[in-house]
Structure formats: structure tokens, C-alpha cells
Amino acid sequence: MLTSSPAQRDPAAFPRLLVLVLALALLWPGLKLSELDIGVLFDGSNAETMGVFLSGFWPPEHGSEFLALLLQATLETLAIATAGMALALAVALPCALVATRALSVSALIRGGRPAWWSRAGRWPVRGLLIVLRSVPEIVWALLFVRAVGLGPTAGVLAIAITYAGMLGKVYAEIFESVDPLPARALLGAAASRLQAFFYGVLPQATSEMLSYSVYRWECAIRASVVMGFVGAGGLGQQMDLSMRMFAGGEVASMLLTFLLLVLLADLLSRLLRWRFA
Image (cartoon, rainbow, N blue to C red; front, side, top):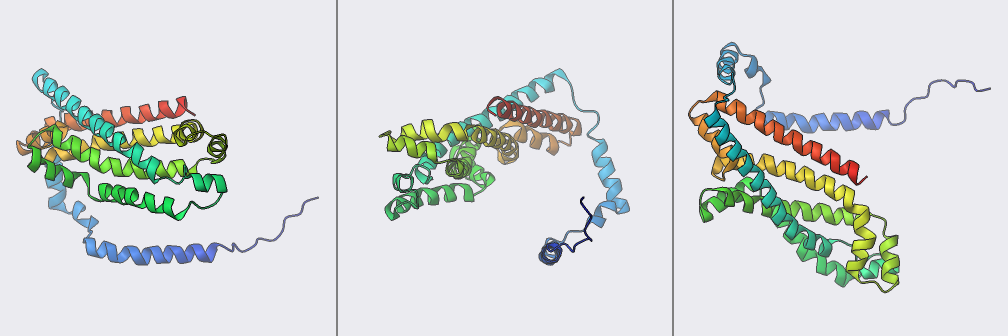
């Protein structure tokens, strides 16, 4: 017969409390430096100004001429995000194959750490991926707008460069997290490294890669809208023009369209995860 023992003191309570106090101690200077003041939002005059501003967003614009313009800007945004992701994948996959330790012959055969010359060969590629993702896409967009002029080309190139660094890093980590035994067995059976990758590593990594890729495509859609404010085309550029003309109804329609795009990307991600689960 089981008897209830007296309540024991949680041994992890003090470490949790210490971490919480440390987090608050680190957060407080950040809040002071950022000059965050939530009370400003509830000030009488500011609340009235915000109310007048938000009232201009209703009703959303739904004229046929504007909807045609909105459709063109939406398709342009999707094209920018998709083309940028395609170029990013073309750069990220080869870089991830070189940067990952999952296909290191010395590590797989010996079952230990890869040889020093193998690690030295990967560091330049890892450094390149760090450089590509260290600069935000909005900065790349500003540079490319100066280089190639206004339009979607600047947005595509900006997304391609930044997301190539992000995808390459994450893909390399995904390849390293899979079970190495299938790849090791294939290499031991005289298979090439590419054969070991396609039949030993990729089948295990496909689901996670697809999920992350679709998530990054969703982020690319958001980024393409933001980059439109610096002249990179798409919904962002049209939204900037509407805001300059104080056309709140047009802005509201664009925000609703943007919400639908994100929802569709989320549904696509769920479908792919279910399909390859």
C-alpha cells in the first residue's frame, strides 16, 4: 500500500528564483536605455490622436481599380519572396554540405571527431555564411537600390544574400543532428559522399528542412513588404505611397492582404509537415 510522503522542498526552486532575479536585473537597464514608457499610450491627447488615426483605416478600400493594383502588388511581393528564396537555396545547400560535419569521412569512419584538415576546410564556408546573415536584408536592399535602381530586383537580391546565410547555417545543423549510422554504413559499403547524403542523411532531414524553409519563405514575404518602403517594390512600396497620401482605407486593405498571405504560408507549412511526417 502506497503512503503519501510529506511534501519535499523543490531542490530547483532556488536556482529558478536566482535565474529570475538575474533576468530582471539584466532586463531593467535595457528598459531604461530604450526609454520605454507604456503610459504614453494611455495619455489623454495621445489616445485621442491614435483614435483619429485608426478611424481613417475604416472602411478598407475595395474599389475595382485599387483591387487590381493591390493584386499586382501582392503578386509582385510573392514573386520577390519566392525568387529570393530560390536563389538563397541555390547558395545555401552547397554551403551546408561543405560546412556540415555529417559527411566528414574521417568522423563517420572513425566514429569520433573529424580530422583537423576537414575542420579547417569548413571554417571559410562557415565564415561566409556568418557574413551573409550578419547584415539585415533591409540594409542589403538599400545598397542594391543604389546599385540596380528602384524595383523588385533589389528586394530579390537582398533576400537571397541574407537568407542564404540563414538557411545554410540551419541546414548544416539539421544534417549534423540526424542519426549518422545510415550514412556511415553507406560510406563503409564504398558509397560516395553524395550517395551517403541522399540516401542516409536527406531522408531524415527532409521534414525539418521543409518546415524551416516554408517558415523562412513566410519571413521573406514579410521582409519583402518591409523592403518596399526603401523602394524594393511590392506591397511595401505601395503601402508607403498610400500612407504618404493619408489613404487609411488602402493601407487597411493591404494589411488584410498581408495577413492572408501569412495565413496561407502557415497552412502550407502545416500541410508539408503532415505530408512528410
